[in-house]
Image (cartoon, rainbow, N blue to C red):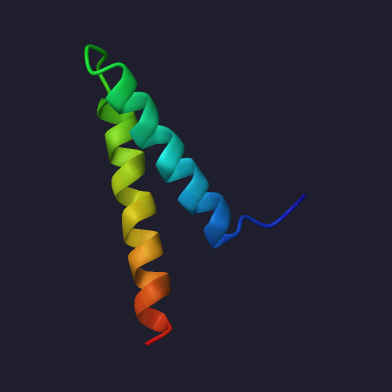
Length: 50
């Protein structure tokens, strides 16, 4: 099993945002929650580098 990298998380977030933008008529509640988790993880990782 491969480890998930920050780059994987960035790609997942970008993909989710792209899908939400392309289909705003859908209910994206679960995906929005996931996007928020990804944003938090990425922010913590970036702040840890400071």
